[in-house]
Length: 438
Ligand SMILES: [Zn+2]
Image (cartoon, rainbow, N blue to C red; front, side):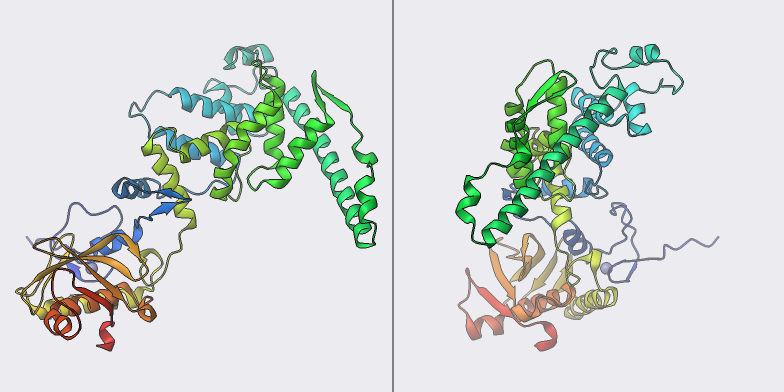
């Protein structure tokens, strides 16, 4: 019987892989030479994410891998799934919903049940039946039918509708006033503008289902939303909603403060659609700050990093120019083969090169890569680091080509070092030429 031959080619350099590596990354077939470089290009670790130092690169790499399919949320439902994903990584008891996951679920479900079937199901659980009477639903309710708004969707809906109307009326008035002020200032009435009282915002008290809100309270909230990047009117409306239905009677000012102390973080995150639930808003800032532990902090930071990193075709496998990338790694393999086993070895995580001087060097992907140094070169025996930059004009050459230059520079260490630099232990090759220029 004919034995079936494994005929799989490396997705980076197209070389046929003869020995099947059982530890392949999911969905990627890679040869021993390409694997470390491809993976490091996919899971490259930055020194900082939104100003927070990454102190544990290997944990961050794991987090990047775990958040691979996580998209930046653009709806409240997506925020629910996002947080559910992050917090589900916290405990390994898979079946039972942790306390925080219950809170996350009910927060989304309660606020959105009137608008979406998905949220209704999440609120009442699997026994929910749309034909149930109010009494039956109250029994299923996580609040036993006692939540002043969540358990009566119509009241919740009307409350938010009325509140939004009030907010938008104020916003409109403020816009009109600003236009008029600008007009007066442009026409030489600047000092007069400061003296005026504007009839659109005469103080009054709004009564919303038993909760009283003054004009100055509302204006303060609106002003905050107008001046903050990540605080939207919808979030402010939800804060007021929480104020109205919370029995702990935390003041509106304190509620706004809870948002205020976290908005620096959320502003930095620069989400396209920040969450509108005050609870979610706070959790996200606390995750970023590590309040839920480093593992979850890194998952959060990794997902932020994914959204903002710039991928370069020259050294990112994901956005590579396929032909140029493949050829560059084929050239690298060719150079290593031509040096022969006595001068060059490919190991599972590095390339070993013996210089003219007799020194063995190791080339690995850098832990924290820089524009000019995507690799980490060491003396293979002593472990001493050797700094080798690529010349600035050549930093956008395909990664394989850049590595060829490093390999050749090291193989010819005798000539290069004796020509320009002192030997050992601080030998520094600065600004090496790419291989096609040598
Ligand atoms: Zn390969």
